[in-house]
Image (cartoon, rainbow over all chains, first blue to last red; front, side):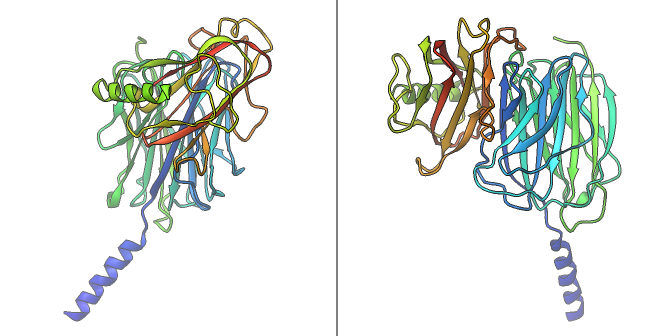
Amino acid sequence: MRRFSLALLLVCLATSVEAAIAKREIAEGHTSGAPTTSCATGTFVTSPVTGDTIVVGVSTFGLGITISAPTDTQSNTYTQIGTTTTTANNAKLAVYRSENVTGGASFVVTGHASGNGCTAIAWALSGAATTSYNGDSIAATNTGANPASGTSTPAPAANSFFIGAMTNESTNAVTAGSGWQFETRSTQTDNTSFQDLFTEDLTTGTSSSAQNATFTEASDTWADRVQSFAPAGGAATPMRTLLGVGTHARR
Amino acid sequence: MKLRRLLAIVFVLALVVPLSATTVTLVPEAAHTSIAFGHVGDPTVGGCSFCGPTPVHINAGTPANNGNINFTIESSVWPTTPGLTMRVLVERSLDGGATWGFLLGNDPSDPNDHFTSNSTTKDGTGLIKFGTRWGGESMDLRGSFVVNQSFSWGISATF
């Protein structure tokens, strides 16, 4: 019995070693007024620390307008996840990451677009793996009221952290899909001045189930991306991205 | 503190009508040069509801418009007059003014980043609009609106 208890204790300890990813803070900013080319997110309330992962979503709009890599006040380098998604009427969405960042106080992330203003949202994550990202992305097109990135493969590592980002062309009210925690709805009451950017997240726990970033809204034209982040020390399951573009009747 | 009272009213309204945004005029449109607020020595400006040396205090609470605060530069000449520039910097303090961090405006790490005039915007007005979203925590604000020359401009805010 004592041997069994010891074995059980070791199993419990082994399970708890796999630390979950903690969402440290989110910051957001948006501008409109060409040729405005930056959208600073504001200072994180809780400063990112060295080793964190920063994820940045950027949306803008307009034919020929491009999104480029974010910058921050600590001079970290950001890499785009997949490619920029453009809807039928030129709303654009891009997501970037920077792993093992240099942290510090007064940490501000700035998104960049070639004009027409932009919206940027930044997440600071602690405990995310820094080596298992592989950049896989899967694109899908959907028609319907509710944006959905689609479900990615392969299955993630246990305790993975997922981020969903979506931009649209309407002023529709938007909520998170089932199981997701809604984080930001940047400007849903003023999408004529700003480009919307909605975000949500969830943690898989021990289920290791793949996720579909779904949002709830009426008919719209939208772009939607989901990205997972494995916990540091977790199974060597590749990170992956999933991207969907949907079109529907405009308002 | 006219603005403090105004914001208090805004936040009460936000609790009662959580999805309706409220727009207030912070600086009436008139010929202005640069305006700063919340720093020692800042002057008051005629009609400006927050100008002067005292930082603007925001009480804790959830504003309307889903936590967004959006500013618009009101100007009859900005969209059609080339060569005008404005750099916006609004900082916030969460510890009563001991430390300050960037809240909204142009890229704080790039001193050359500013808004420029004579441009088009998504809504067709050509006016500057910028904003951010916060979690409703209590904070103090200070900031500056730096223009390259005097022209007719003002500021409105939507909460």
